Image: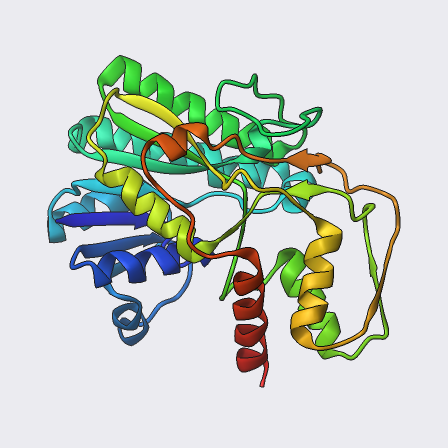
Amino acid sequence: MSIWITGANGFIGRHLVRALAAAGHAVHGVGHGALDATEARRLGLKSWTNGEIDAANLNALAAAHGTPVRVFHLAGGSSVGVSIERPFEDFSRTVASTARLLEWLRGSAPDCALIAASSAAVYGADHVGPIPETAVPAPMSPYGEHKLMMEQMCRSYARSFGIRCTIVRLFSVYGPDLRKQLLWDICSRLKGEQQRLDLGGTGREIRDWTDVRDVVRLLAVVAEQPPQETFRIVNGGSGRGTCVADIADGLIRQWGGTTAVRYSGIGRPGDPVSLLADDASLRRTGFAWTIPLDRGLADYVAWFRQQAS
């Protein structure tokens, strides 16, 4: 089975390549980043195309390896902050790339199933408790707006042209190989033996933390499920919320330190106070999260220390 992954060189993409290749699939990647043949093979890629997700690259990939049975679309913007600083860049990476991919699928691989990674950022603020997929989207950053635009294009192509698409709205994905965001920042400071960590926000912000190893298993499971409809949206969250302060304390505990944490009390632009998944529809599929937060944080600290040594 030929499977393509856009953004295969990214954080989630690399984990997904390994998982699908280990399951015996022929995995081809397209996106940005220089990967030599040795590194591509080590990841599990049969081929790697370093470039834009456009007709020229997709046609060349299809000519060399045949059209895909499934495409996992992970390419796109990955930072609220960057989307605020450079909104057009984020639009191009998320919205324009999806439009080109959908148009190529329509003309060249209309029977291919598309699994697209979106974000809980489409929900926006003002949510108390678990958020169902039926909640009205109200993004509060260009990042969230662009993810919602991506979803709307997928819905349009599903309705108008029969492209089978599943949107997975991911929440706070963390795990080994993540080299940015909160966990990376805190561990970098702990490595520097800082006696106090100064963090933004209040520490009471709630997020639905999911280990990337569980997330790629979810993506693979979703792709295997028989299609009930041409378009669907699934919350890729656990339904368990943890505040930022508990994450910071957990990392410090796993590190073995006694560093104190102080919060500024000022939230970042584009950051909701709470993003927690209603996982009822996911539970009905039989999927279960297997990596508890304590183990995930311990594994992250162990990975960080190994790569930093």
